[in-house]
Length: 310
Image (cartoon, rainbow, N blue to C red; front, side, top):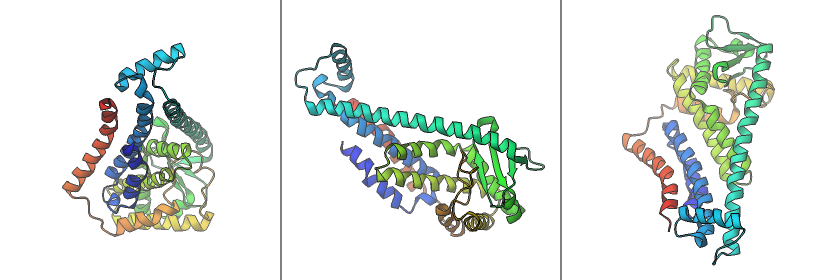
């Protein structure tokens, strides 16, 4: 239970307030994922272990005994109301999280399919492009990616084409294609599911926001291989400023219908531009090793503690 409490509050708070994640966004993203997974396993596991105490000496044997008692409708000697409630809460919480995760992915897939249909009807291929880039006739500067396996697309608006020069456009397109290659939508959906399943839990919202910024920084790092930092930063700033002026900070209906948020998301523009222009150094080898070790330990510790519990 102590590990569950640490992963539910102080550890995420410390990570969200740390200044090193922009220096290694990929490692920070992996750490966030391990915290979320380990926290869920620890919380549900601690409830199970407490509730299973009367059923057996170890979690494995206790689970077998629990199945037998459920089949016969009996309780073992020593069973308490608190223990039964802990088992019920573990079952309810685990089921709620899994069902919410499934519903989030199913809903997102349906939105993406509808979005692909709309894009097919309302857009044109970008001339001389062979990688599925589509252009919609919209004045606002929009750029986003639409996952879909072999149907994945990068969607641009005519407003964006008019706003950016060739190098800036190349950087934005490289950024969006990086989202598709690295499957960022899967990670974002997982954290969105966590937040929607526990809307009253402030850490879930903080984690979702932190992960959203990290995946943008990871895509920026890929785009930096296509254009220089200043060009990419200027493109992000131009699109962000123009987008806010055009639509007062809201998304267009198409951009909200299943694609990853476009490059101009207001809360993400400032930190990304500052990072690109500030020549942020990478983490040292020792620091990277420490983060990787912490990530692995967090993934292994909860199941190890559950198996060793007697």
